[in-house]
Image 1 (cartoon, rainbow, N blue to C red):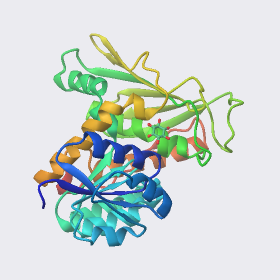
Image 2 (cartoon, protein in one colour):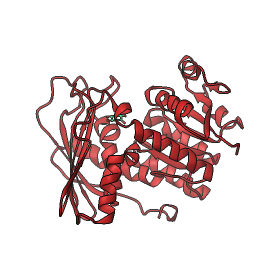
Image 3 (cartoon, protein in one colour):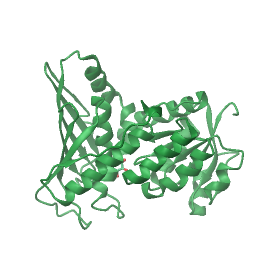
Image 4 (cartoon, rainbow, N blue to C red):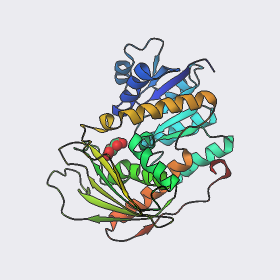
Length: 326
Ligand code: ISE
């Protein structure tokens, strides 16, 4: 491997462009050598000012070019598997935006592909694990300094959603962050999901979208979790977490209202990508892995069944964790 990590960014849309700007201007020990997008004009626009980088419309050409050590996948979730499997076989490090894949069967294929090569290559873009507030709560849970964690009450507010957003995206694009967040904060798996809905906002343009909604979860040890979602809230982007411990309450994110997720989590994204780069240079995965992506896909599946039948409690079903992830 060359001294700097040579990165191909696949997908030059909203998230891909944000990562391109981040890597080019703020990351150390890395440079972009390829930008891949089926929309060549979009890739050309994204590459402007990045010396030594090339545009590709076919990602296979990029990953076999000899110019790429690692791949950042920022295409829509349903396209991830097609890029993940050959890139794993190629033995390249990957940072894959969330969700890893949209369902647990395809996420399991990714886990199996990694198990077959015998080493971890995939990090999933659950950036909240790198957020200072999230880390404060996680450390308090791990240290036990305030007693046991009893409950988490979260808010996930978006000003609006893109035109392509579907009713299911509330679970697999939005609440997927809390599925991983809860797993990260508690160090446990989510065992069940329930969705409660009520009055729907007149702002909702998407068929099947329930807004606001409340997603309830339980973890292995019985930590009770509620997530209040409101994705057409107009006023801004806000993510808050209130953790009830036996001896105190901690809350993070309160009063942090931003225009969008890029601003709210800019530091978390920066840490996430720098840690991924440094991990890849050491040959390690330095964040949430393919098992985390798979477990969240299983939570999403339960969430999608729960949203179809508000009020019912759906169990999360997981395969046995392979040795590689223990
Ligand atoms: C978006 O993709 C994100 O990752 C945001 O954090 C989330 O709030 C939003 O709902 C998603 O669409």
